[in-house]
Length: 318
Ligand SMILES: NC(=O)c1ccc[n+]([C@@H]2O[C@H](COP(=O)([O-])OP(=O)(O)OC[C@H]3O[C@@H](n4cnc5c(N)ncnc54)[C@H](OP(=O)(O)O)[C@@H]3O)[C@@H](O)[C@H]2O)c1
Image (cartoon, rainbow, N blue to C red; front, side, top):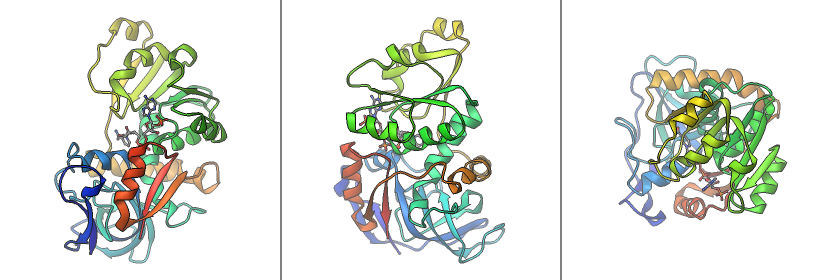
């Protein structure tokens, strides 16, 4: 098969579409013939040499795909060759074929095209597991989503609105602010123009910035607030005022999805299919797709992501 290989750590130009060995289904795995793959910020970190795949994962980038089940290994439950699926991966999505544990497969929600289904697994599993399973956002509470225009952000805003929360978000341009309002955000702050903590407060914060926003995030948390940090775009180390945290009876969590064991990913995937897919099928939320780029031109997709102008997801299509 062909896959996007990272020939050396570096810029988008190190991504090369070339012949590589075919994957074989191990015990409990299926091989998917890939229709499309989602591009994630993590793929850029991997390309630059800062985020190696976990042990046993394919070396090629790509944390999610849509496609058709081509082969089924021993011990697989509930999936057969020919099934249309999308899947959460530990790596290897930028390829014609990828092997994945059956627990990480999901059906394509009704009303979503086979290509656009590739925009869903990583954002749905990340947002559902952090905002709802871990931080337990409740109807009527306020969620603050940093980077509302990101792949993660566009999904988080829609999901929390669909489940009855108030949603506030930060973005870096007027155009992004306009789109986020269209997607349902109740309040949008352009972080380049004002300090979000002067205006916004929240019961749950989904944070992708880390150190740079720590003090402001704690200031913005309501009493009993929960913050989950899933990205460190603004650094990993900062001073924490524990006094402020305990006065507010607040908590801070940090998580990653990629390195979790298969049974934990499987539990998240099942919960997403049960709780999120019906909302997607009903049209209450939709994948926001900024661009579809031929998979062989993954370097172009990474240039787009690096520019930061995108709103929503960039997909690689076969
Ligand atoms: N831990 C996990 O399991 C997990 C899983 C998935 C994703 N993530 C993380 O989630 C984040 C989003 O991922 P993605 O793939 O959706 O990325 P993405 O589409 O590339 O989005 C990154 C976003 O960050 C925004 N941003 C940059 N500086 C900002 C600031 N100071 N304040 C607010 N927003 C800012 C950018 O928008 P502006 O132009 O508006 O600045 C951009 O929309 C990444 O940090 C990624 O590593 C973590």
